[in-house]
Length: 257
Image (tube, rainbow, N blue to C red; front, side, top):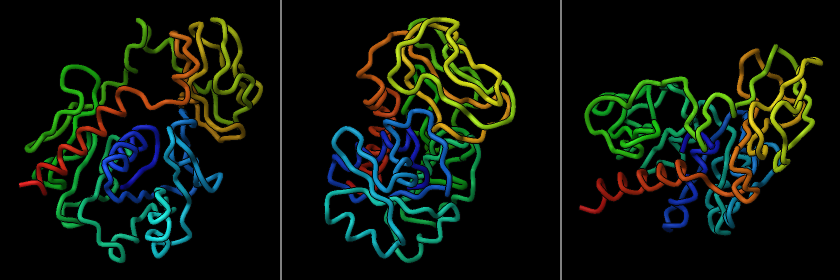
């Protein structure tokens, strides 16, 4: 699987729970907002535990089998996907949610799945999965593409753009209210180059980039969940679970005939 952020983690978690052998690749310095539910944190810390399943950073593709034998998910820093030839997976999943294709093609495996816009089923991948919230979330697309990126965050308790924390300028992020902190509307939760990032709604800080992250102006640095439920900071979201179910459906569609 390409990518190990929040959505990819939900997919990998469901496939692992279904007793499929899952390995993931990531970039050298991944930036996850919902760090407590992102396996890519293993790139930084060596391992990451999400809802009882552990991911572990692998030094190379040759370590995949030994990590899998421990009941864990291997993660390899391999943005160019060079491990593909050595490991020869039956399925390749591109869950980078990059809104564009970063080099995934149908000849990579027996089944190639692309999540979200940027892929065309029948051309560069076999199946596209709709990632846009709403009626078609998780739908398998066998011809054509997913909905284009709207640029509007999903609605949570009636809030969309208000709940997202964005960098006011280029610089280094200083975190004042990290994950799981209850905050008030207008409270300064982080700084970038001395400029404040204030919460647009009251709630719990559900997402925040790692302290010290380098950000660009307008970049998403975190989010506040207006529902204020602390447990939701460390559990996989309904969207990520739905995407995991879609991946499982696509795999069964291809191999369970």
